Amino acid sequence: MSVPFLNFKPQHDLLREEMFKAYQMVYDSNWYIMGKCLTNFEAEYATFNDVKHAIGVSNGLDALYLGLKALNIGEGDEVIVPSNTYIATALAVSYTGAKPVFVEPNPHTYNIDPQNILKAIGPKTKAIMPVHLYGQACEMTEIMDIAKQHGLYVVEDNAQSHGATYNGKITGSFGDVNGVSFYPGKNLGALGDAGAVTTNDPEIAERIKGLRNYGSKVKYVNEEIGHNMRLDELQAAFLSVKLKHLMSFTQQRVEVAASYNEALKNVGDLILPEVHANASHVYHLYVVRTKHRDELQKHLNNDGIGTLIHYPIPPHLQQAYAHLQLQKGDFPIAEELADTSLSIPMWPGMTTEDINAVIASIKSFF
Ligand SMILES: *Cc1c(COP(=O)(O)O)cnc(C)c1O
Image (cartoon, rainbow, N blue to C red; front, side):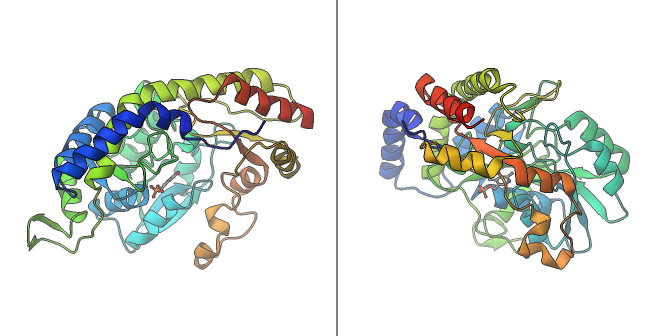
């Protein structure tokens, strides 16, 4: 029996009729950019994310970039990012001309460590970008306190954690401005690229509405050098359908994780995900760690079980960031995570058979 790393089929079978209806509605509307579907989805997502404003944009990376730009972060500024994130977090900083400053995570939760943030703050620091990695909320109360004490902005990278909470408050609602991705494989995914900015600040919201649309709020009046980073009607309509099912899909992810947690504890040297006492986890990814990662991955692959590594090379060791002149050994926790982490199958609609096949293969390896 083979188990793919990710399978959209159960979700998409369930949503088929609603999604086709959404498609027909947009098709027949004769209006494809900046229309009612976008406005509706933005209102729905803002309600879901407990913020005053959600602004649909082209993708998660652009959402983060526009958020930083709306805070006037740029050349000469530094922005604190985790050393073990997906490179997009750092790229958003680089797009503005600012410098990403990497900070090590807590080795148990894999989320940025507030104590390490304190050590990295300098005179050029303008913002902190916590990434709620794999679906677990960062220690946001502590991070917001640090930001307040040091006069820094917070920009949450909420690409992996739709609906996660810290001390009961939802991720994407803490920061001054936050970015979320609706890449197809994310917990809330479009049928193509999509993203949104979330904020409670009406001025930031207005600025981003301009920036995503050529720097223009009134047609053919351009206030600043903007971009074409809009979310189209079709994706917005699809996202409205999927958003209604997000909580139920998240619950299914949490149940798959509970099965893995139960069956895989004390198996070999496996380290299972650890959830902070004040945080919730929406299991965008279920990441295990072992010293025998490459062999385990090969074994699972031979048994027809899909896996991925999130992420094999930390940003500071990517050629793209060679100009920062960072070396192997500079961020040992991120490097250790890159060498030992393995993501195993996780999607809503996984059957007991799927889950048991993954568990059996892992157990037979050890
Ligand atoms: C996916 C992702 C992004 C980028 O989102 P896109 O929509 O693919 O541009 C940014 N940060 C993190 C942590 C991500 O996982």
